[in-house]
Image (cartoon, rainbow, N blue to C red; front, side, top):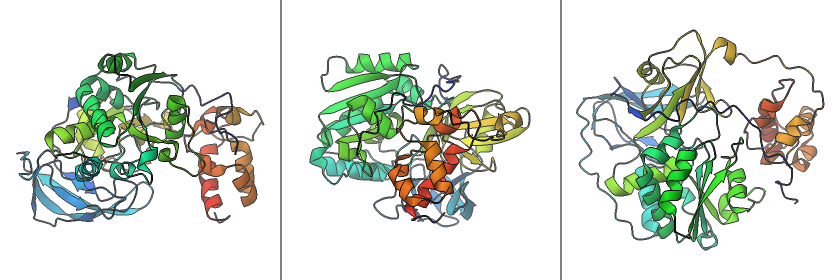
Length: 437
């Protein structure tokens, strides 16, 4: 098939709104309780291994991976299990969740110790025991990413530091505040997976992070720091690979099929911390921002903390909240209640007022072609939507609907405010199901 990167446009210039880029991370106090859903990753849900009344410690396993494509879940507090509840996720799924009441002592699990890694197998086991998943939003288990079908064909590690969504600056702060574990994590992956090259992709609107990585990798020919144009969605995996390596992931393929492993900067830094301390993934840095937030901040939060506690730590909210989003405004997920907990994949909480949250009324397509020019995958959203409305599976296949990455760029640039991104998602389902919507 022809290259999917032949179009002249590769996305859209979205407002950056990086209001917290210069704000150092603040550590939140202990919440009154944490809620740990057993589904915080792509793949099989975890099975609770605790019950009401059990004592847990910081780093204790409370959810055991339900298979290889899964990831353990650990407690970020010491305390007592209050019970196992069913939590409704924003997508409607019902998920078993462990509720823990902290005792305030923050006693580490006595069995925790830094792993001894000497080879690829040891690194994969470390990623599993850390409960590590992609922390840029997708939540793909890192141990699976470290286990490609043909490991000898993979030669390059790409670090995703693009952070192209508006508002979010958590990854930027990871570069600046945890550069030692960013570099040590990268070095471990490169060494134990026998990779030849490392490319660190960072958007140009993060000059301090770029300078930091240049200074720490200067002189090492195996490392390349790649400043990227500040264009959304530079951080999309397939786009990032093409920009950083010139390679293209084949249709239906994975990054490993292009000889690449992609890791978010916070993910690789978390691995570096685990290899040093043995403390698994229990906390997350978040950007808290939006028109309804009184004090925008970057905060370190214990995973499982209710969103309302995080918002209160940032001075509470002003005006009437119209929408709370986990993640960025382009690809984030709206939550129905501020009682929903922070999970591994969260990198931001944004709260917007009613005016900003209200969707504009769509009007008929004016055939301007902006969605075609902006699509980073070279697709034709307007034609795909038409094929979907006619339930034409043959056309959906011919138009390569499955390549849509759900970035929302088409909806952003549409002058008539049509829900193109939402319809594209439905079209992908119809294509996959042979026309069944």
